[in-house]
Amino acid sequence: MDIFPLIFALALVYFFEYLINQALFELVYFEDAGMTQAEQYRWYQVIYQCGVFASRSSLKLFKVRRTWIMAILQGMNFILVLFHVLHPYVINISAFFSLITFEGILGGLSYVNTYHRVLTMGDPNTREYSMSIAAFADSFGITCAAFAAIQLHNYLCRAINS
Image 1 (tube, rainbow, N blue to C red):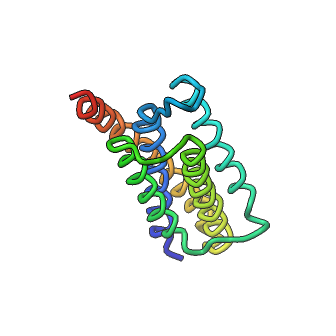
Image 2: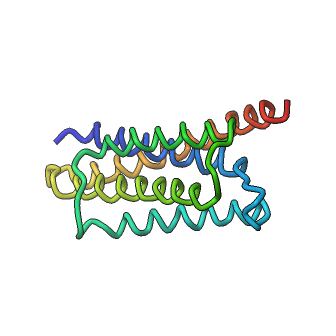
Image 3: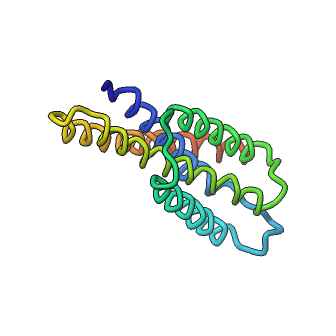
């Protein structure tokens, strides 16, 4: 089994996911939500983690073979949140919470299904190696997102404040 498409999709999901969390969440604020910006940010993180937890617990219920779809959907999530930062269009914080939940679900589904496929469909002789490559892929996606988030966040702050 060629694991490259699996790990590439996993890295992309994590790249978009952490780019949203690290570069964009801090810039999303709903004035009429009855919470400070800091409180909203903390709720974004909690809701995101709930989505991750639920989807990582879903493997017994269903499996996703085409994990690349989650990379595309997470990229679309990134575009939606980025557009909201630049031109706010989400009507209220509850609608945004739904988007965040979906973000977490995609990340968790990608993670659990990628590891499941590598573990069950790979060559038993290279299984450990394949698992370590998958672990590298999600860490690589997160690290790339962290560096990109610094630049993107700074750019957006300048763009919003000018």
